[in-house]
Length: 335
Ligand code: BMA
Figure (cartoon, rainbow, N blue to C red):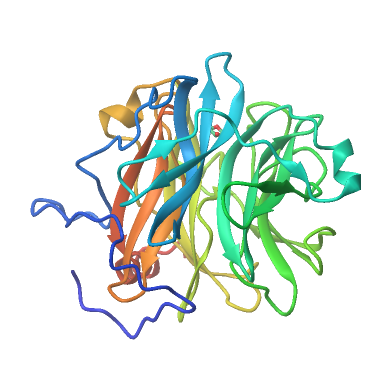
């Protein structure tokens, strides 16, 4: 572990039981994989073809989460999962059935498909955002208090949009979200935008945050886990896509965004933090994909554990230290 700078995590939680493995002695990498990967196999529940891009949060002394489970008809669905330690998960075999948060929602509540969830504790409840089928993909928004009953709200945007990621607090008295406008297919472009809302229903004041550059992030970029508030700015872990002769390659890297005006990028790492290199990331339903949707942070020790999907098939973990990731981004920033 390198020397901690004056970095502090803001509004963090102490997580003494964060799922964790020490960095292997031979590794000089900023982030390293769990030796228990994949921590969730594709067939953990009878209904699943694959379980991947999923979101977890600390809950009642353990962990809970919303999991992307594509079923054996290959319908993309969200399921609740629970874990005492963040490694070993029990996932409901039945998908989440959203209750309309109010009468108007019944019109958009007909299920088409749901995928790539994010979960955040915000004020008084857990909000869930996901890619929601409504005449094409857009950003679904809902909430739960107990991971038993879930309420669906209005979609945040028109189709087509993916990777809606809420900030964990209001910014200048407005709810804030990152998203990535897209098309109806395997979008060959994608930039990250910022939008704000007074009420979690009406979103506007859209701002461009960042677009593609080169290499691993040359084709498209999209926000990953909920941004982490630090004294250096919002730490955003995001996925980037390269188009190879063999199709898309999904890696992830990080950037620091301004605390008050998060559409302003302070630093953005040029190299990736992780790229698909392990067998379970290179081989699966969609080869060469690592796709992060959640991060746990222990504010006491600065440890970070990232949950990511491997090859659109399994759930995996990677570990690191927030201050090391920030040092890496700053010292390897795009000029
Ligand atoms: C994206 C999303 C992700 C998926 C990735 C690679 O467009 O659909 O869910 O992991 O493609 O297939």
